[in-house]
Image 1: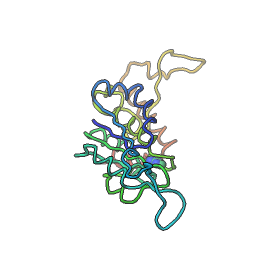
Image 2: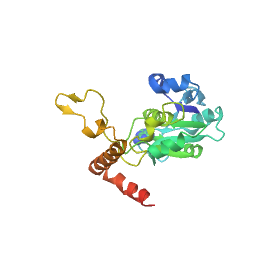
Image 3: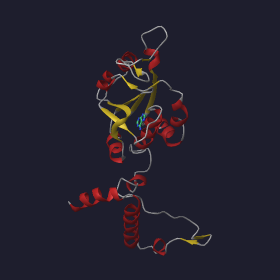
Length: 228
Ligand code: ADE
């Protein structure tokens, strides 16, 4: 998979993409990350990328030319082009699974008050990572990269994400490792029983309980999908 980031702050990506699993995915040749500073594609002397809004109002608006020019330099054939903004489609695990199958993803990261509306025509999707406003799309695109790349086959063991929270439609059940007892807190007996059927039932029960307590909104969809 090729992932391109159109950004005014390419250095923001250096740490995140060069650590841990995202780094390993690159070293294995599964994914390539490319940052593009679209300021380099501005069409004026001062490399200005934003301007005052027509009609007046507070804040600056991202100009279309630098973004369009930068896009012209990228191979966007069959690419998913994601415009990061708080008014976009909410990003979730299902969307991450869908995007993990793409060959090319382009993130367009805005700053300032907003985008010139014509920039939206470049996007296949407008995406938000939650109902809050960030100073720019960079952190959102890094969050999404992390969620997407770990799902690409070969990046981590497949079993490790089969039971992930949200993949099953429920929140994940509790995990325990050694020691059997720590500061008076014991590992539930069922996990030591060796009875796989009982363990499976206990985990399902715990997942349901946790989801009911913390995210009853998820249960509605879960019930619907499991009735069919
Ligand atoms: N840019 C600013 N806020 C954002 C959000 N919540 N999601 C994605 N991109 C953003």
